[in-house]
Image (cartoon, rainbow, N blue to C red; front, side, top):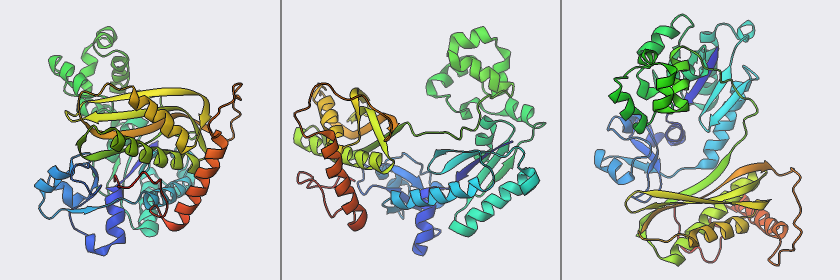
Length: 387
């Protein structure tokens, strides 16, 4: 049996817990600009139709009494670690998939903790006792179904789908709720009169593959209750990124350059905190018409200094032929490697300040920020905050 746990409105719930004045109030965690987007909405705010990724200005229209709270990622990460530690007390097979959700393989743990339901209730109680936060849990014979189940009775829900219940549940599951089925696929589903996962069985593998590619065979397997994916305990992070929505659409080079520098510093700091090097650096731009584009470059030598990330991100930005003003800027890194991974040395000497020296400078700055706060030290060119 696979257990999937999803914390309820995690960021907002943490803020309501830590500030009693926010309890039972419609709040969102978001940037202070009206052009920012909602990171998390409390359940009181969701009653007004407010959802994650919604522009803040639209959320404010929906709820006149809406309270906007700036996020505190350091606090959320700390609570997330405590939650994952609690899960590991019930099973060694824990797969974190985001800051507020995880899969747990609880097969064979019944001898120690009782039935699946008893185990789920014990986990929920322990999280509530130690962190004063509610969670929703789904349990099912396969990984895919456990995630669907955890979302069925939020907040503070517990849904168990047994092996005997699974075929009926799968047949009646709206296909739009299947992870990976987007708007484009749904248009094709509508033309084929596919509304539920059970409808997939009406078509042959050949037709499904023609219409949906690899997803076609995957959907057919799911409709038959087949999901070979396992709880992966050796999960490693694949990317780190930071982006910000601008106060207004703009194209001024120096302003965009400053924002790229600011984002590069945030990404570099997180890289170093997690003891990673990166091989690929990318930049993301969203334009005034909401179209977006991403460009990336893979380096010969892995890096973790903010200066190296900034130089590459700025070089990528210079290659754009801008015809529209920019609404959002993001910088990120992928192809992450452990800091202790052996790397190929460069044959040609770099005349710029070597990466190791930049890394030393960055780590000194990181320690100052850790001790005195984010605003105590920053680049002279960063005169305006962007969050």
